[in-house]
Every structure is written in C-alpha cells, then in structure tokens.
Amino acid sequence: MKYEDVVYARRAINFFDPEKDVSEEMLDKVISLAAQAPSGFNLQPWNLMILRDKAKKEKLQALAWNQPKVSEAPITLIVLADMDGWKSGHPTVEKNWKEMIASGSMTEDKRDWFLNATQSLYRWSDAANVAFAVKNASFFSMALMYAATNYGLETHPMDGFDHEGVKKAFNIPDNFWIPVLISLGYRKPGVELHDSKWRKTVEDIKITFPEG
Amino acid sequence: MKYEDVVYARRAINFFDPEKDVSEEMLDKVISLAAQAPSGFNLQPWNLMILRDKAKKEKLQALAWNQPKVSEAPITLIVLADMDGWKSGHPTVEKNWKEMIASGSMTEDKRDWFLNATQSLYRWSDAANVAFAVKNASFFSMALMYAATNYGLETHPMDGFDHEGVKKAFNIPDNFWIPVLISLGYRKPGVELHDSKWRKTVEDIKITFPEG
Image (cartoon, rainbow over the protein chains, first blue to last red):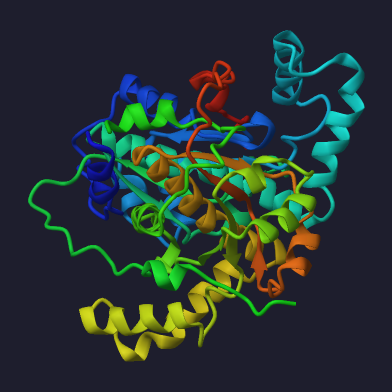
C-alpha cells in the first residue's frame, strides 16, 4: 500500500471477525516489519506476548474493562517495554556491543563510556527509566500497527486495563512496563466504521514558550 | 512511496545538508500526516518546538552531547509529551469531551466516569503518568519520522541530551517530558550510509513466561 493510504486506513477497530484467523506467517511478517523501528543505541527494548488461546484472552479481557475485542480478535498482543534494556549483561546490550566492535564503530576501551552513557540517560530517575522503555516500545508499537494495516489487518490499541493486575495474572517480571495492548485481526463483515476522530491541527501541535 | 519502502528507507542520518532548507509547507505536511497517529482516548498529548534559528539550535546542541547534526539540520524538533494531557480543563480533553457529546458517543451524565477513567489509568503512579505522555508522543514521533521519509526527508531521533538542562534552557514547563529530539532535513550529498543496524528477530521479540 501507499504510505499515506496506510496512515488513513489505520483505524482502531472494535469489531473483529472471530472466524477469520491470522496465520503465524502473517503475524511474523507484521512483527518483522515493525522490528525495523529505530531505538536509542539500537537497544530495541521491546517484546510481545502473543495471546491466541481463548482462555488466555478471556483472562486478559477480565482485566481490560471486559472489552469484548480482547477475546474476539484472533490475536491480542501484550506489548512489553523492557526497563532493563540498557543494562550491562542484557542480551541485547551485549549483542549491540559485539556488533559495534565488529563494525569498528566502537573500540573495546570505550566499554565504560558506552555503559555510563546508557546509565546516565536512562537511569537518572525512575521516570527516565520508564520513559526509555516506553518510548522505544511505542515506536515499535506504532510501526506494528501501520505494518498490520499495510498487510490488510486491523488493530486496536488499548489503554483500558489494570496494569498491575495484568502483570500479576501473566507472570510478567517487574523489569517490564506494559505500554499498550493491541488486538489484531480482520474486520467483522457488515460493520460500518464511524468517521475518524478529530485531530489537532498543525498549529495546535506547534508550541513556543516565552524566551528566558 | 510504498509503505515497506518507507520503513526500509528510514535511517538515522548523521549528515544533513545545511544548504538545503525544509519549507514550512513541507514541515506542515509531515506534521499533518503524523497527527493521524492514534492516542488513548484521542488525547493527543504531543507538541513540537520547531528550532530553525541557528543560535537556538546551537544552544540545544550544547546540551545534546554537542552533536553537530542538531545545528546542521535545517530543523531540529523538541518533541514534548504532555503529562497533563488527561486532566479536566486541558484544552484537548475539553475538545474531546465536546466532540464525544456531539457525536452521541458520550452523554453529559458520563462526565465523571470519563474523568475518573483517565485519572485511574494515567495517574495511579508517577510512572504511569510519564508512560501515558511518552507512549502517545512516541506513537506521534514514529509516525512523524515515517511521514518525513515518505516525503523524501531524512531524520535522526536523539536520546543523547540533558533532559533537565534542555527544559530549563528553553523554558519548558514541568508538565512536559521530552522523549526525543528529532533532526530533520535532507541528506548531505556525497555521504554514504553504513548498512542498517542489526534487528532482533521475530523469535527474539516473542516472549513467554512460565504459567502461574
């Protein structure tokens, strides 16, 4: 699809076709394309729990304002933002380190510099640590929603869930924040969409503050 | 451009052409397309400070690890995530409320329900408040980078900056978090790109935890 068509075709869909499955191959295509999203220091602090099983989706739905789409969609994703994703010893950090050494963009003597850099940016406060993980996982999530649209799928990003309850129910370790749940599937036939919601204008978005 | 071509064409560019300006019309096209990004309750808690002035870009550069691209790019954006973007009285909240009433999707008697919902999701902890703002502003930022690519521009998202220093230097109020700086412009002629950095595989991204 054309890029602009993807942007306008992406809508938060409430009614998924429970009869139309999304193949694992299709899901993998979506994830692969989303995985090209950028991240700070290429740390890619994102993971996905893939819920297909009806009982698991119903368990999630009960913690997500009982929104029927959570279990009606063939797949609901729990997006995870890894707050440990900048730490020495984390597999992605170490893989990045090896790749940087191999490519010549980093030298062994800069190991402390590199680790201090990520520490100073992502661990100067609790808020900064959450922001690091959530920002990057949200780049990935946005890319994933557009990738799904590009392949003819529909999505619905959801905030309406009990963050701590979902962590507990699905044994999600404390290093993860859950920025969003995303239901994924095909649109239910015969259901008409409302018009797109209003958006802020360019002038609403641009902001200035008095000079100091 | 084709969606997949945009995804693979988007690269974090270090060398911008300082001689080639980005018109305000082009910038507005990019922002308009990015503004179609989704957000929880359509709250759109994102703003942009647009830095074109050389002195201002240099002031920012000094707070951003002195990365030359900050001032070499014709435009550097300070992305702002509005942590107050869910509160009663916020212009976007009130505009959403009016639109929901007008469309019939909400009734006046549900005002308390609506405000309690956003409060319960976005203010149960400091971290949740940061996550709300940063998540949505990052959906917008990702959409903005792809939109720029679609129109032939280049971008570079940056984490390497002094968050509190930038807030102070540019008089940014405390309700804003700065998830990322984005330089925007055209690629400097004659500069060759490195290969894209490695990405996690689909299997790296999928994650499961032992059942409780």
